[in-house]
Amino acid sequence: MSTKRATKARGWSWKRGRLTALLCLPTAVLLVFPGLVPNTPGHVGSLLETFLPWLGLAVPVLLVPALLRRSLLASAALLLPVAAWSALFGSLLFTWGQAPDSTFTVVQHNISDENPDPAAAARSLTEADADLIALEEVTAPALPAFEKALAADYPHHATKGTVGLWSKYPLTGVRLVDIRPKGVGAGWDRGLRATARTPRGEIAVYVAHLPSVRIGPTSGLTSGLRDESAALLGKAVAAEPLDRMILLGDLNSTVDDRGLEPVSSQLDPPGPGFAFSWPAKLPVTRIDQVLTRSAEVTRVRTLPTTGSDHLPIAADIKLPD
Image 1 (cartoon, rainbow, N blue to C red):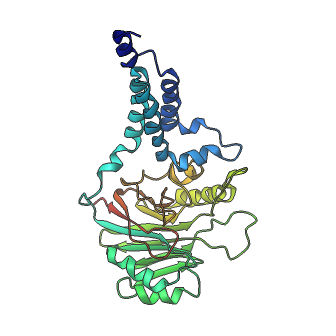
Image 2 (cartoon, helix red, strand yellow):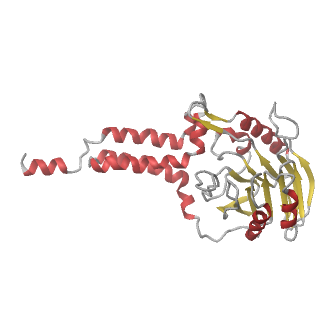
Image 3 (cartoon, helix red, strand yellow):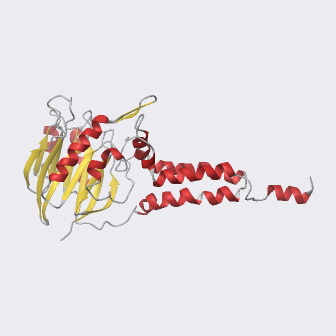
C-alpha cells in the first residue's frame, strides 16, 4: 500500500462507524422518551426510568469504537445522546457547593428497622439543622431512643405505625394516611399527615413509605404493591386542602418512574442535585424523595451514613411569602 493510501485509511472518515452511529439514535430517544418502553413484561419501562441517568454511560461506551474507527459519522451522532442527557441531567452537575436559596430545610431518611444504634443515627441527623425530620422504619422498640435523641432540638413530633415526623414547630391535624395495598395485613401503617405551624404559615406535611420493589433476572421489576400504594397516596395528595405542601418519604423509586405518576404528576419537580441515597454503600439511585407544592426545592444533597441501608437526604426549600 502506498504511503498516500495508508494515510487516507488511517484518517477520519464519514463512511466508517455506521453501526455505532445507528446505536446513538435509540440511546437519545430512550433518554428523552423512556415512556416508549412498555411496562410489561417485568416492568422494564419502570426499571429503565429508575436508573435513567445511568443510560448516559452509553456515551463513553459508544465513543470508544467511534475513536478507534476514526468515524466522523459516529462522532457527530454521539452529539444526540450527549445533548439529550445534558438537557435532562446536566444542570444537576453544577449544584455542588452552591449556597442554598431557601427559607426552610428538611431531612428525609429511612433509618432502617435493623439500625444498630438508632440514637446515634438520630443525633447525626440534627447536624443538618433542619426544620423537619421525617423517618421511616421506626420500630416500636427503637422509638424511645429517637424521641430522646431528638427531643431537645425537635420538641414536636408525631408517629403513625413505622413513620414519624419531628418538627421545630407545632404540629396539628395529625392523622394516619391509609396507603395500605389490598391483601396487606392490618397494622401496616406507613403514612401520616400533619400541619406544621411555621413562622411562614401553615404547611401540610406528608410522610410516606411505599412498599419495596423486587428485581429478578426472570421476573424483572415487581412493583404492583408499590404502584397501588402510590395511587392511594396520590388520592390523599389530591384531597389535601392546604395549598403549600411537602411530601417526604421513601417512595422506593425515582420520580421518573411512571409507577409514581399518581403522586409526582401533582407535585413540583424535585430540586437540583442527584443525591443518590440507595444503597448506602454504593448509591446508584435516589428512592428517598422530597416533593413540594407551592414551594420550591432549591437543592437536594445526601448526608453522612447512619448505619442504615439508605443515606439521609436534606433538601432546602424556598417558601413563598
